[in-house]
Image (cartoon, rainbow, N blue to C red; front, side, top):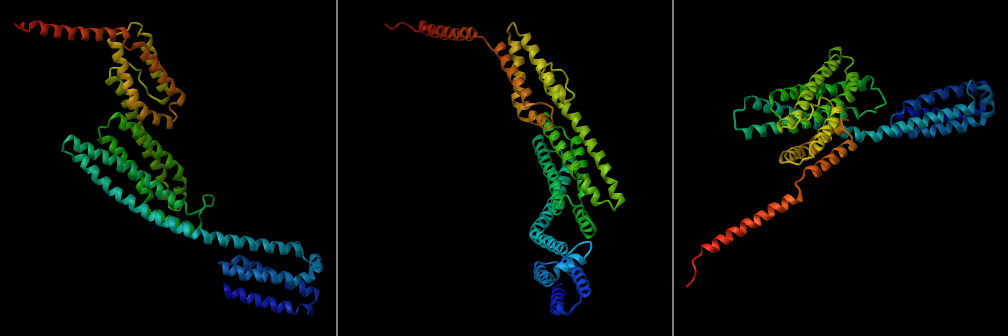
Length: 404
């Protein structure tokens, strides 16, 4: 490229030196010919060295033909001399900026390529570990503590692998401008990278293993709350990238059909998680013998809890040990399980608002004020303890023999 630009510059200089001997028709013809050749050279420039050589040629071209500016402004159509020079300079500026941008992005592309390699290895490693842990889970004959450790490790690995898959997808597509649709060699390269990274295979495997985990594991209510949030994040991530992945695989009809198949699998996973989620939530109340109305969707959470507390407050006009015990049971669930684990999931998925959480807190405090043990009862118990101690001491003193 550099040699062709130098040759072009030499031809221009030779042509310019003989400009005085040309007729008007020759000047017009030579201008148009040289202009087209120079515009093509600018377009084909591939490096900063190329564009630097073209810069001097553009300046020489303008300087030489400027002597004939008045004639060319009348002779050229549809653009005159001034407009042609402006277009030439604009084309030069665009090519210069494009070459500079490509150079600056080279390092970033290299970094993302490395990240793709690392994340691919991480996904493959976690796939192997998860397969082993699933086998251990099915055949586990060990003690309960050992089994719980396997379940916890598997849960952690599933979450890590799910996160790594979408980090890998992000790295693959971040190498290209999100507003530019890959074409030609770029699209083929992207397809090859998706093939090597097993993106669709890993997504399907992740969903299938999460479904299997739910089907073969006895989980606590708090575990289900966390899994609900992870399921929704996975689904959201998939919805965000599936069009990009589908477009990249569009030339392969078989793979293109896998997108709706994965949607169906994720729908099955969602259904299982939802069923366990509401079953676990209602189970916490029933296990504690609390008559909270069954909750089947997010819009019922606040009304059900608020109504239960209001009913307890209304029915606690006469304080009793039973009413205080009911309060303690609910308060324990609210402060130890619901607020730290379930409420964040509810809020993240639009099931409850901060104002509604604050309302439940307020109601719980009001409930406590209605059922808390009265001060007179505390004083009475304290007095009885003092009397009992005094009676014992008196008895001991009376039983001692008199000293002669």
